[in-house]
View (spheres, chains in turn orange, cyan):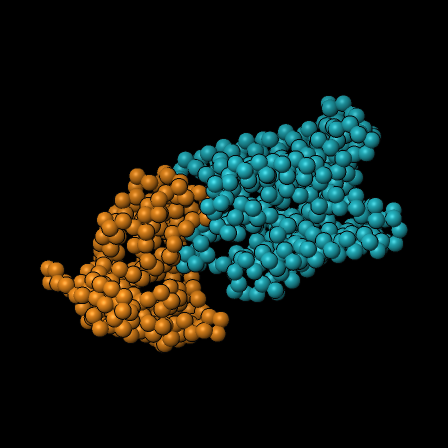
Length: 258
Length: 337
């Protein structure tokens, strides 16, 4: 197996005297789509920010074998793309300009936009189905449209490591599938994707591996059918679930709160 | 993308032309009542009274109006980019208030006369002290909310200090002099004022323009911008430092001139499709045009005592700004905190 794209060793994050992420170790290999699940307040967002180097953390994070802190910021930005939660935009820019920001780490401020940049933006707009939205003002778009524009921005970077915080939030069922397909494709073709998910069935259907976080700790890191067993779902999420098998894939469906 | 660049160039060219025209008009008006043709001719040749009026009085005043207006417009646009909020302005850092307090202290306690060079130096030191204190209070990794609140506290403190200085001024004439100076004016500013303030303002332009690209990335929020390679700490430091330098020097030579930093970027924002990076240069040019126009206005409005330009910018600026808030209410309500 090739060297992992991202390795976290004993990562802990303390905020305001409280331990949010507690001694987490995980590895993202090439061609892997990994889902990060856990109840509200488990520390998923903080963990993903720590992996992106956005919050101070104890422990070690390495990308492509190099300590994250030793990688120059522009290098890091080209190798690791981060999609924050919420898909909010501060200025009413055209959506195409938002997607073009994905090329920010590649751009040289003293030279015009390169053909490579233009192609990457165009490709990202096409695969996310946002090409028709490119000239629309991003703050006037619907929640689902903004989510896809935000994803297009992340994909335009063409970074091998993608860390996405709830990429399917506020998407209708069809676009949830579209986005999951895109992320899985991005992982299998270009590198690795770690995505925070709330829909366990969607995670089980698409992810190669599921990491379950509870109170800041990793309680499972395995293939979906093992990580999302009915016992674990009951224990971690406090809901009773049935596992049904469709086309060889085991999908957990929650039935009622425990 | 290409289309925006082209229209931004056209916009900048139009604004440059406007600023140049206003500068010429500014050289032609004044209480001396020189014919316009004589005034323009005196700029290049001759050494009679007309030449002295135009070169020693009107030229420094005109250049100061353009430089100060541009500095206020640019720092407004930079602060708005940093804060991702169209309502940010230099006053949120307390820089103008602190500059005014330091300068009025020097004037009120007779350390120098109001036209001495010690006033601008005190103003710059005051602005830098307030911004230094802001950086110390806000620390290294804090939210912009903390910066805003600290800036608000410092601005209030500087305002109180100015009031205290007026309160304790040794004689009422000096208090009146300070109060007048605080209103903001470009009257009787000399070449010396220009020479001491201009280098600081030009330096502030460079410092404020360098992080422009980062403002566009900040549209995605601070975390996403940081993940794209924006060094937030550095951008904050540059905006804060550039603002202190430029606004401190501007306030020190001209007193408090409000609303230019707030209004100028708004006037041009729609023409650059709300791009916080591309609004910088047009914002500065609009600021220069605004202040030149205001300073021409105070000279052609007939009155016994010349109106203060700071009073005019506030009188015109506030209603304008309120109407703008009204017009953009929907966006502002949906915008970031």
